Image (cartoon, rainbow, N blue to C red; front, side):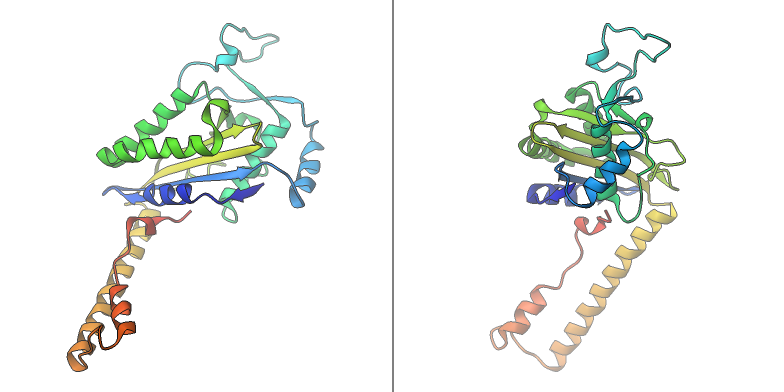
Length: 269
């Protein structure tokens, strides 16, 4: 798996990392190529020792709605199989797990993830509604302008109508977002088999009252104090040794560059 450069995703990811007053929203959108090389091939061979790549494995029912996948409508379970569960081949499962590893390394290792921790989502509309609802409730009216840009950028990268959409819904023991103060999270994979590409959209809300949230706020305060101290020193030096930008262009540009951190500096992922 290889992370693909996408300036639109980088800009959107910065806008998806914001402080809302009582929580920090930490979002990220990334694009990955599914073409395997080097270590990926070795890992895939090890993964296939547990089962052939085209063997189907049962996934959990989607959590974004109470409706089953469209592929399963009208089907009934046989041999005690859950009629609401969907399936994917082990090769696709490998892509999903490897995407998680690439996105969250070195903090988390998802190599032990199993098929039942993933779901295939019923439709693009279900996913879009779930994402829009979560983000609108978190950031409010600002999402009215961000939402259309977000979905347009994803569509340009992956062609949403040609995608299978999966989600990662781990149990509490293996959930990387199950730490103290985590309010909600989602992890969606938009997989275009023809393009051999996955767009990964992950987001979580963390309470500022948690140790993680307080840590983020402390970092912000430290940066603000550093900027204030720097500005005070600059003012003192100007009073003692007045120099205009016209007389010293380099000093003038240096002073112009001093500023406070923006919302994008909250990004930790």
